[in-house]
Length: 73
Image 1 (cartoon, rainbow, N blue to C red):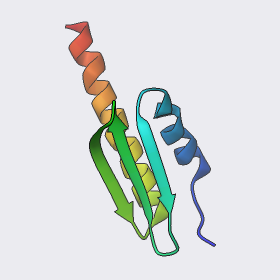
Image 2 (cartoon, rainbow, N blue to C red):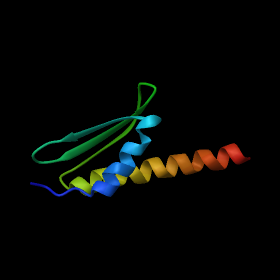
Image 3 (tube, one colour):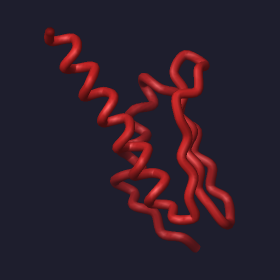
């Protein structure tokens, strides 16, 4: 059984109020798909569960940080 960082997973799920997030756990890999209003933004997949989840969280943190800066201008 693979180990997953539950704190990172919880951080990813917190974005589900603004994005459609699909997380697929396969025997050989984990995939994370991110959409907004039915439009695919990006996806991440890896045989390392934490990599796919952490990369997805990093992506969402980055684009939401950018949005904060744009709205303050």
